[in-house]
Image (tube, rainbow over all chains, first blue to last red; front, side, top):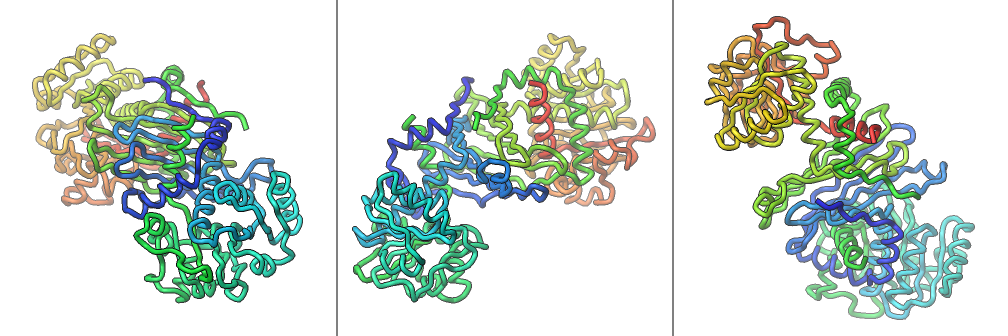
Length: 316
Length: 316
């Protein structure tokens, strides 16, 4: 048997240049909402020693597809102290008919970052008011990528950024400015919310940063940061005051993310929540009025990993 | 970051030539029985389409160790029809302190086969009567490897083989004979059991092949084949009539393998079962008399995968 294809991060970055990540995510969410994805529960290995770490295994396939994917992603919070990024990992694509390895993608977590950014840009395109200024809350890798993908995929040209650390906020603003975006630093999250009709939250915050009093009519919020039970960026009253509450995965949002917090607190009811894929394939109705308030909460589903990895393989 | 090491099957085969697999398995079982292994439940992806398949994910680490392992193993029963082996897979070793990839072992399932054979030979060495003739029940890859490892590690020289398919049995006997072993084909499993004081069962049978009436005093049985709830090679009365019932993993043997079947049927009680690692590290007593009947039931534990993968990495 010939050796399977091993794809380096550099090859992945080059392939991504020719991939419309938003379109790939659109296919992923539609397939997911149509019930075509087979995704067992996430596997978890907790490394309870010094230095501690955690490893997540996500895996699954799409009915009618040609591969299954296994994604192994690790987080070691002590890594930056020794000059390494905290996250690492790889994705492996297998032939769905034989189990043979189709490709080993040494993405070091980059494909997860990119598919998350593409999904955020897609959510803002579908629910947000066209042409609105984009407010980015957060200063990390995901904040940068969300801005880039909103510009790339949605043609957004005006940005405002705010983060809890002013130094990191300025650094992000200059970096985005250097790459040709029109970016302003917001002095507070209130000012950002006042000036931006689309807000993308991508922090690791464990307490709400935005509440309903800050959100003007006609605002869309794409919430990215909260993907585990301990994280929260939105006060439940933001979801309660929204005309539309949308998630990538109904089942998962009962356990994780902003929607889970709002269900727990009773701020919203189960029957208020829509799946993004249903709006994308027009079996559910999205924004109907420019003055509506909308929220999309994304916690990430394995079919996004599957389809982005397949797209990379096709574009090598 | 430099590209991680990708190790081909050919490199793995070469490295295995310098590895004492039995000794590695001895360390694995001792570490496991000492409670040093951290092994979450096995992940499972069932591919319910044509052709069907199943994928298992085993992962874990050893306290005080330096790596965690993720093993992805697939079984596609239709593969032989298109000229491919049914099993495939790989193992990935990660740095336990950082999550970095230490090695990607493209073993196509071979390391699982080899570590299983090494574990079988170890079990027969520890519990079997020295110098006895070895009876191999089964004709597949594992039957061949068990014979080879019993010869290699235990110096066994006389073998008898029996399988349900006479053509495959003759083929295995010639193959083993060609590689220098003294092998006889048994006309029936009864004759094999009559002539061999060590019996290794390695079939995928779903009904018992051996019962207590066939087992003479002084016989040791190493049971390999039954690793999932649907498989069985020994009638529960074999375990009931044994002086010692030993397993690789107490917890797992409550759910899988011969021990699980015998517990279910009430043939043996929980407190009769010993862990192999405890006999190996002399915290439990093994065979005390050449006339005793003993059984070791092996269902496979992730720490075997971890240690064999680490050994390969050290011997490249």
